[in-house]
Amino acid sequence: SSTLPPEPRGLEFAAVAPNTEDAVVIPEGHEQAVVIRWGDPVVAGAPEFDFDNQTAAAQEKQFGFNNDFAGLLPIDGSSTDYLLVVNHEYTTEPFLFRGYDAENPTAEQAAIGLAAHGLSVVEVKGENGSGRLTPQMGRYNRRITGTTEFVLTGPAAGSDFLKTSADPTGTTVLGTFNNCSGGLTPWGTVLSGEENINQYFANAESVTDPTAAARLARYGVEGAASERKWERFDKRFDLAQEPNEVNRFGWVVEVNPWDPTSTPIKHTALGRFKHEAATIHVTDDGTVVAYSGDDERFDYMYKFVSSRKMMQGTGPAAMRSNLTLLDAGTLYVAKLTGDSPDEIDGSGTLPASGTFAGKGEWIPLLRTGEDGRGESLVDGMSAEEVAVFTRQAGDKVGATKMDRPEDFEPNPVTGKVYVALTNNSNRGTEGKAPADEANPRNKNKNGQVLELDDDHAGTSFTWNLLLVCGDPEAADTYFGGFDKSQVSPISCPDNLAFDPAGNLWVSTDGNALESNDGLFSVVLDGERRGQTKQFLTVPKGAETCGPIVQEQRVVVSVQHPGELDDASADAPASHWPDGGDSQPRPSVVAVWKV
Ligand code: FEO
Ligand code: CA
Ligand code: CA
Ligand code: CA
Image (cartoon, rainbow, N blue to C red):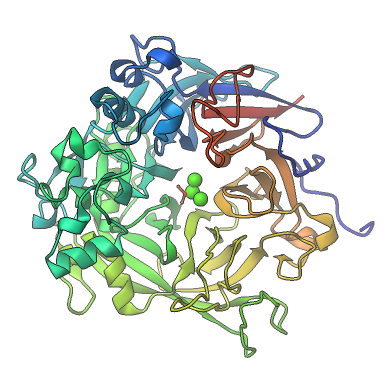
């Protein structure tokens, strides 16, 4: 290793060892501080957090639960002050309420749950000489919840599939749910993916029409009562009474955080599925490409290519124009082929070529015109059906069944595109798709990271696996060809980010190696390609999300601390971040070099 070039700037830290601490563990020579926690005040009038006396009225003004995506947008070109935008993916009621009775939730508990979902926009102030960020009660601060009004745009807006008794026009929705990851746009907005929306809707089993039932099943909407039982308090969550409310979720959401009075948008031209997120690459001619994974075992990878060009500038005219970029263009789904002549046997053994690699094509599904009308490119489906039941369109065209596509992230330096494929325990099991070159292990516990060289606005790409994750001592792992004795173990890649130099950072969720989840840096180019180092670990039971890697700090979302086995608010497995015998609180953390 003495012949290796120096480590890239910013990646010289000493790797954090795998551990099971109830703490955020960071490298030597670094410092950390919580930026904001569940229950902290966000908008004017918010009371201080009081775990044992929480109310919906308080929660609507406070930081929501289970922060996932995090983004920092500089305020007026400032190098110290930002808008922090965060997704609140979901609630785990046994952790929100002491003595929670899952069979008999109260109306107030349901209202608190709705208020703890959505997004937060919070001004944060930096300081010279540290990476600390301090929340401000600023003029942009906003809470978006499960009851905030959204407008639907694109080819499914106004369709019969989206009409309900409360909204006979099919154009206005209350709330956003299960906002997992997201992305910042170059025009100053935030995109957020509505992911596991199936869990909010009850009584799918009462739907007998075979077409409607098949659609629900394809989206994982099943059973009688829902987990949270919100259907007892609001009929929109009861499919027997409101069969279309579920179709109003599962979209990519766009929020303009610079106008707290703006109505957030659900863009139907990008299709409906369990969107992990949506992230943007802009081509030289201003065409906008939005990438999005459908996080389900054996589901697909998608991209949307705009027909409009991005307008430069930050003024109101540019914002108005750019807020329509995702409403006209073409939606595609990915089909991958491997180039190895060897059989892929599901063991994860590298082909003789030395890499898992191949070609791919983007198959068009739906074209949306400048007038907002959709044109189906799939035989036997209408444009509205392709937009609302996009998974079935992917099935029809033979898209490649992937190992749970999570974050997609284009590298801002090289333009290559990366996808975290988190795991797939069912790969190669009875009746399920066997391993293929892009998903090379059966019963895949540890996941892989895919690298695409994409003709962004075009329809072809090449691909290879950068990482086949797991214990580097195991034969079925691969770290970009780098010496496996010199890397950190990594399992279940979930969110991806780039530092300003174009190094990849990967956060994990569900580490199958019996240690805490964390954040890792990965070198992409040169002799150190594939070198993977753990930068931090998160507390017991937490996943690491929303990484942001700047020159002056790393920011992570610590989601669901303490959620292990049968833990609950009565017996939490974590007391992070407040310590003592306190309740665990999902929080955003900043880490910086001292
Ligand atoms: Fe919410 Fe796909 O992780
Ligand atoms: Ca996640
Ligand atoms: Ca995720
Ligand atoms: Ca995940």
